[in-house]
Amino acid sequence: MEPLATPQIIQLPKFLDKRGNLSFIEEFKQIPFKIERTYWIYDVPGGEHRGGHAYKQNEEFIIALSGSFDVILNDGSESKVYSLNRSYYGLYVPKGLWREMNNFSTNSLALVLASRPYDENDYIRDMTEFNNWLK
Ligand code: TYD
Image (cartoon, rainbow, N blue to C red; front, side, top):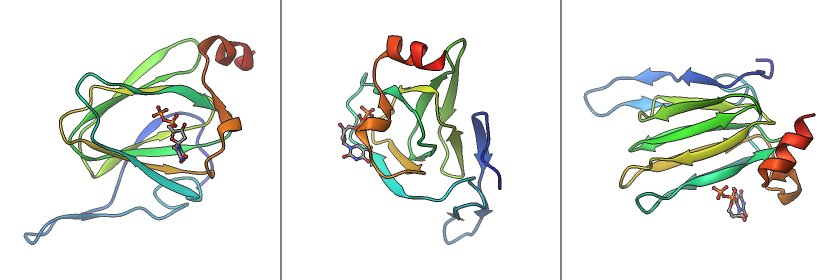
């Protein structure tokens, strides 16, 4: 799978079973990158938002393993909202987009697969700096 240039919702395999359902992800199969890091966001108090930054290189795949939340992506000219609320699909986020997350439901759990190890130097945390970096 080649790196993708645009954000997209990716449906995951789903094994429906009366004992309970099962989905999975393998690197370079369902998602277009090698998984170097996994983190999750949980216990988000009502009304809080996360994100508010861009990555210069890191790509991500975000899944609502439980509950729901919105991911807002901005490419410098337009903003799109992706509502995640099922564990059998996720949002692929290419590098170089401003991203925020909000509207977390009670007990929601956001799983994030990332293409790079954590590196604060890969973050752009200021919107003005992001817009300059895009030029
Ligand atoms: P951050 O990505 O800034 O969270 P958000 O954008 O959702 O507010 O992460 C918050 C802090 O957690 C960050 O300052 C450092 C730490 N952190 C790590 O050490 N490793 C990681 O993989 C991530 C995602 C964050």
